[in-house]
Image 1 (cartoon, rainbow, N blue to C red):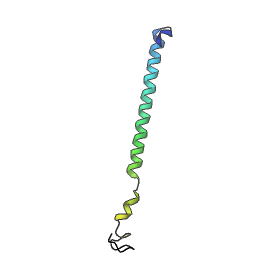
Image 2: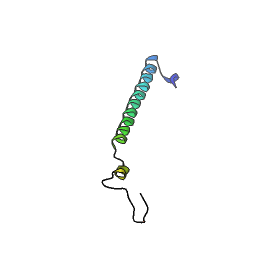
Image 3: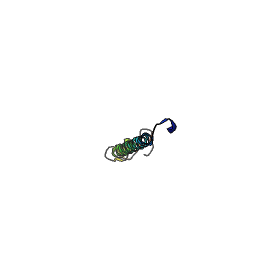
Image 4: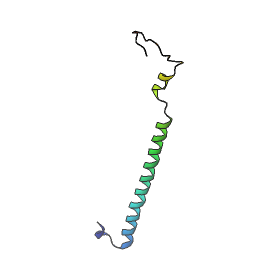
Length: 67
């Protein structure tokens, strides 16, 4: 791949470009994963109201079974 390039400056420039693009992609992927973790940590679960005894008191249901 590098044999077609004319001199070492072009090879070094191509290597640094590849490294910089890799670092930028890595940083963006880390920020995206942190964003997903933040969304997951702040999301209210649907089953939180199940254990709220003011809204769902324990007792017998319609079929006569104990909750």
